[in-house]
Image (cartoon, rainbow, N blue to C red; front, side):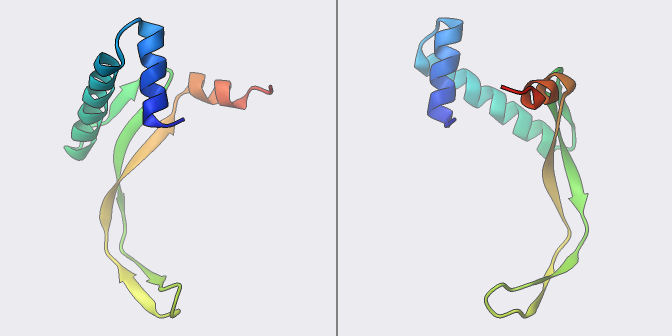
Length: 93
């Protein structure tokens, strides 16, 4: 599903315009990104938790040359699916 398809689904389900649905989705996504970037986690009960995780520095390989390269330590976004989401994905069709 693309962002445009998600906006169309939100607009239909909420009986609002696509423009309003797009603004609401953008606002929600920006709020999650800003909170996680500032070190806070965001929990949407049943859906999951967004947080930041520290990744240690490590040595990797350049796939073209095979040469060893140093990958620096960094903070990366992390998502942990909630119980309801896991159950929905795990159901057989």
